[in-house]
Length: 218
Image (cartoon, rainbow, N blue to C red; front, side, top):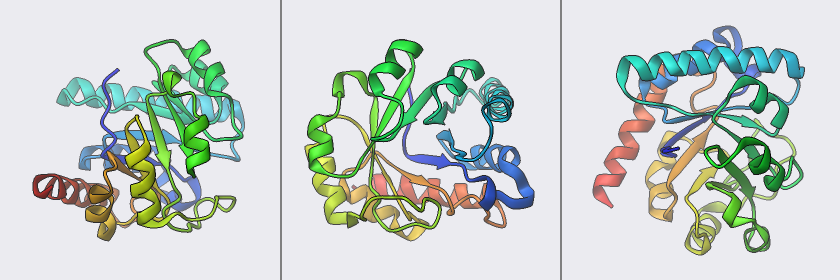
């Protein structure tokens, strides 16, 4: 399945607040988000499955109306991805194995893996993956148990060594877009840069426009 990593939204129910995850996603996609990851470390599987199904329906409707398909990726929970009909799964180093995800979801699924250092990259099952998440670039409040930040130098080194498309994650804001692009990453994964913003639509639009401008300058 074709996918575009450039503006990758990772959801956070707490940050979304009264707007809620679903409204935030719908507005952000209208603004230019290219791929959505549903991440919720606290929700029960059943509740997450139902939410994922609603998000998938909303994204399918968006594709029908605009011709622009935005894939839905589930973080960590293979069962949720399978039951909801999501487009793929993102796993961490300690999450569901990429091998298990690929076997269960099939060749058309989008499978991503979090990478923090060169050793993890060297050990990654590249043949089973479609992309990698590289970071965290900066420390971030949206994920308390993250590994040590790698900065833009670390991001560039991993991107240069990586045979797969890589998306930068970890504290990425709109002011970092040009640096992310210069690192060689194929996109930026954001949480608080969209979730909890006064207008998820405007926030996503600015990120998309800045990425496009950085791409044209590259």
